[in-house]
Length: 245
Image 1 (cartoon, helix red, strand yellow):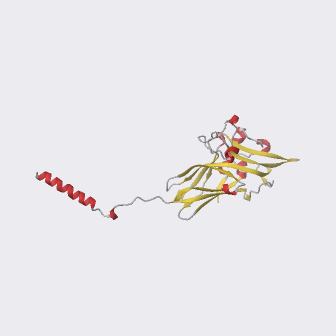
Image 2 (spheres, one colour):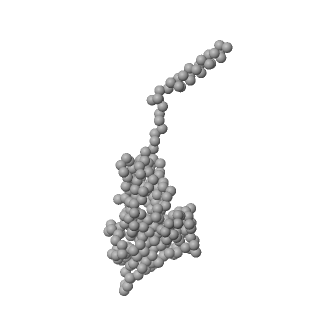
């Protein structure tokens, strides 16, 4: 009886101690801070602003060219960090360089922290690059890749004209199919904090024709849709097409 009585008294005292624990002894879970951001995209050709419908640019191969159309998808945007977790957006964005509203992208709130680099795809990964996998907007329908060539979507449509003496010739750099997905690397530190965040990216079109392969419209092709070798060259060059301002 005495030992049972002592055990009950001990349990009662323990419960009283737990119940009277001060509020300040309870450590609240720290909420993760984040902020909504915008991705702003501009275009240049070796630091000269892109002006459409004007043959005034030259690539490394010596082709003098101008651009009439630039449409593409951006997907799998990922912010990489050594101090916080990497942050990935599992979204696909349609971009038309001639339409300003599509070049200002509202993205999910990014957790506060220091980020070392950004990666993103020009195009759509194999899990989503399937006919009718995207909402049937006019833009997505217009970007469809022919079913006879494997289906899915165009990753990029870059079109224009270049000097081909004694005349001018057209070019269409159309990328599609999973092997021509471009993974872009943007190696520049980025701090996300309490200030409104605008991430400014610039696309240099000449990077598509420069490195590691010098691309010549005359030698490598000016109409490349379905030309796997030509598409692979453009995709390999695209790794550095974006930089952060």
